[in-house]
Length: 402
Image (cartoon, rainbow, N blue to C red; front, side, top):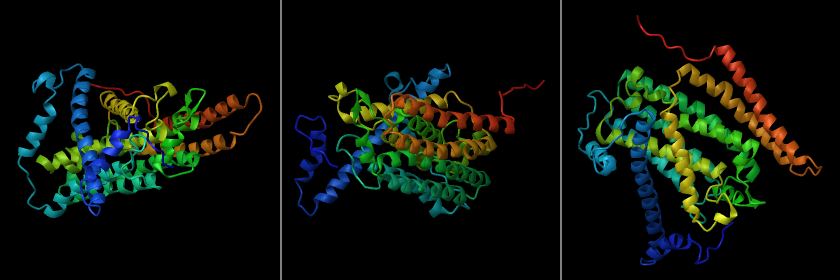
C-alpha cells in the first residue's frame, strides 16, 4: 500500500530528489540512472557509517577497557578511519604461491556483494525503500546466504590449514545460527500476514492510546527480538561468537592469508553484515521508521530509523568489550539446544497471541500477557537449566601457573 507524500512532509524532498535528477536524461535512460543513484546512495551512506562505526567502536572499547583509543590522527583521532583506509590501499597484496589465485581474488568480492544487495529491500523511511519487493524478507535471507560460500572460497583457496579450519568453523557457525535467525522472523510474518518489509513496517506505525504497536512490546515480539539479535551476533561473527577469527587458536581464520585491500573488503563486509541484520531487526521488531509517540511524528522518519540503528550498533560494541569468547562446543550447544527450540516455541506463542485477540472478558488483556510471558519464560528457564546441568556450565575459574 503506497502513501502519497505531501510537500510539507520531511521525506518529500529526499524521495523526489531522484526523480528530479533523472528528469534531465532521456526516458529510456531514466530507470538505469535511478538505479545507479540508489546504489550510490546506499553504498556511500553505509560506507560512511562503516568509517564512523569503526572510530566509535575503537574509542568505545578504549573507554570500556580503561585505555586510550585513537587520539593522534586529526582532532580527537577522528581522521583515524581515513588513515586506516590509506594504509590498506598502500599495503602489499601478498598471495600464497600455491593458492588458487582466481578464487582467492573473488572471495572478498563474493563476501561483500550479497550484503550490499540486502540493503536494497530495507525501508529506511516513509516511501524510502530502494526496492520494495512483496517478498523482501525472503530476498534478504536469500542473498545473505552467499556469505557461507565466500568464507569457504577464502579458506579453501588459501591452501592453508589454519584458513581451511577457520572456514569450516565459520560455515558451521553461520549455517547453525541461520536457522534460529530465520525462524525468529516467522512469528512476525504470521502477525503481519506479509513477507514485504514495507508492509511489516507500515503495520507497526499505528498507535493505540499513545502506545506504538511495535512487535517488541509483546511477549512473542520480545522473545523473537532477543532470539534474532543473539543469532545476528553469531551470523556477524561478533563477540562472544567470534570463533572464525579466534587469533589465539587459528590466527585469523579464513582471512589468514589475506592482506592489504582484500583484507579491508572482508573487514567492510563484516560491518556491512552487522548493519544489515541490525536494520532488519529495526524493521521487524522496533517499528522501523515510526516514532515512539504520536507527538514526535514531526521528526523525519529516516531520523528515527537512524536512531534505532545506532542504538543496536552501540549494543554490538558494548558486548564486544564485555563478554569473553565462547568455546566451539558451547556455541553449538547454545544454538541447537536453546536458541533453536526457543525460536520454535515462540512461533506457537505468537499463534496463541493472535487467536486470543478477540477475547472480551474483563481480564482478557492481563490473561493474554500472563500466558504469553509464561509461554516464553518457562520453556527458556527449563532449557537453560537443563543445558547448564548437562554440560556442567558454571562460573569460570581462572588458575595461574605456579
